[in-house]
Length: 184
Image 1 (cartoon, rainbow, N blue to C red):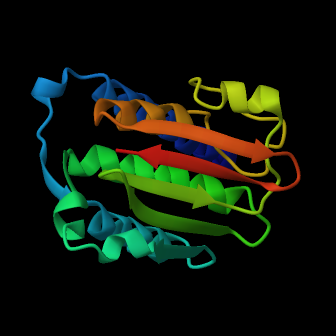
Image 2 (spheres, helix red, strand yellow):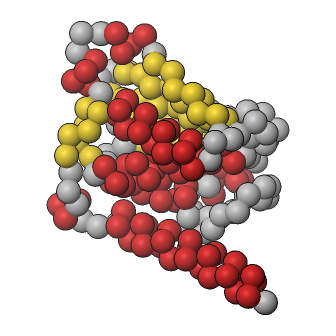
């Protein structure tokens, strides 16, 4: 009974934290502290934190040749809220790792028309067309619930990326994996 109560309390705590983060992502942008952040450095930081928490994850960050341009350093910087953007990136990477057999997320960072472009790719179970339409709705859980969760992570990631004037899209095929695309 105590074990069940502790499990329920842990699950409820996760939901509360998720809801609080959703509320933070709904703030008026003028009330959120924004600072210059380099996207490549933030990705590396999020990767290190995730690997510390789950050593079974395999997180690969690939750098596109577009980053060799003379103005790449400046183009990789954006004004962002460190905490919120870290949370969005973490959710995208974890989603890849949770739903792939080998717990892998392959991330590519590039510059396209002076925009930062990120792709988060897994070779996992994929999603149906209906699941793709609903993935960014709060509390949505797909048909293949292979891991614990509350259905908040992808809705939160989308809100945070939108708050940062970015776009988030998903492309998936059931049985063949999922790709999340982010553009700032």
